[in-house]
Length: 92
Image (cartoon, rainbow, N blue to C red; front, side, top):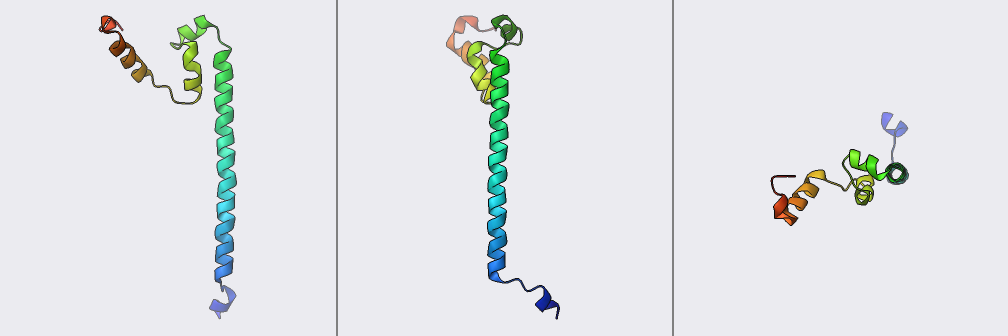
């Protein structure tokens, strides 16, 4: 008798899977929108700083977009400068 009370057929399983995928899709869009908002806020904040303030925290104006998009890596940037100009080796 317990089998008849909780009879889950194939259609209800497919419906629950579709509902789960829809909810996951909407949550994904929400998280992407939140991340984009954080990137815009970071960009606007850094863009509003003066060149002296940016220099004080160790970045240049050209680095702002990559910092806001989380693609900036400080170590790679320093290695690139040293490799690009061998006269600076040991001083940077």
